[in-house]
Amino acid sequence: MHSKERVFSGIQPSGTSHLGTYLGALKNFVALQDDYETFYCIVDLHALTTPRDPKVLRSSVREIAAIYLAAGLDPSRAIIFRQSSVGEHAELCWLMNCVAKVGELSRMTQFKDKTQRGGAEAASVGLYAYPVLQAADILLYNAHLVPVGEDQRQHLELARTLARRFNNLYGDTFVVPEIMIPKTGARIMALDEPTAKMSKSRPTPGGYISLLDEPDEIRRKIRRAKTDSGTEVTATPDKPAISNLLGIYAGLSNRTVPEVEGQYRGKGYGDFKKDLAEVVVEGLSPIRERALELLDDPRELDALLESGAEKARAVARPVLRDAASRMGLD
Ligand code: ATP
Ligand code: LTN
Image 1 (cartoon, rainbow, N blue to C red):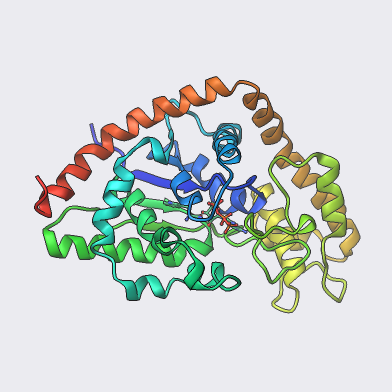
Image 2: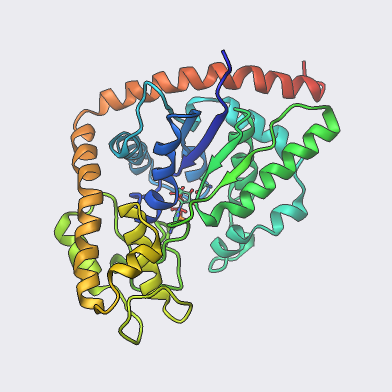
């Protein structure tokens, strides 16, 4: 039998996931499970790179597990697990730390952004090495494809560079992974500030739609969302706010932005926003309701994660052994 190519991706258990995570990443995770052998990780080691309350971290892990399932991942097909349960991630990360260069990590824009306020000197070494751990995550499964949002492009380029460098130094070992970025929804912006990414590390309450927001909360946020000057519902560079809202509408209704523009030709922002609120409520309510049900049974979620980790270990172990042995560790 021809074996399926592999997909790997991950979401950090750091606060509740939002509409950007859904449209940029999670929606693709679900679509890919039919045709690929999929590995979807809850990257708790990555979440530790900025200080966390241990109790909150534990509950965030379950929350992401519930959201994965509620969004449509099927554990009989997709392997869902927690990164720290598979020790091979941290081990391969060390090996890749010895292949990555300080110069290339210093160029990572996410590190620069995240340390802008506190300064790089005060950042953890883990935050600096974050993209190396991400590369290890992907290479450990010889993943061909990595579905992510636009903000992860530079990290994926680094993963490709490290795979190629390792292969040149030690012989053909790793698959060089391809990035997969959706056509719509790759970079959802904050509703109150359309020049900033919708983000869970720096959320402003009105800018962010959580996957667990109540319908009325969603309606209120859309009603208050910033709009641009003018009246036409079009996605043009001078209309960053409306362009963002059109991207959300298109992503959640599985249509293209021009199709949605066509539907609102001759209509105003008010009509568009009213319908958009219902599109978002309809898209997210089933996820929210199912996730809350699943969260009522944390043991079941823990068991699911443990069974996923077992399957992940079986794939990761020989790949790590091979890489270590090629470096002379055996
Ligand atoms: P932070 O907000 O702290 O930077 P994050 O939300 O980007 O974190 P994750 O939750 O781990 O971090 O991201 C999970 C996935 O969601 C990644 O593939 C990321 O590219 C994607 N993603 C996150 N925010 C957006 C967004 N605003 N638009 C599109 N995709 C996004
Ligand atoms: N850095 C990613 C999360 C992440 C990831 C990965 C994504 C960690 N490891 C491997 C894809 C593949 C982020 O979105 N913040």
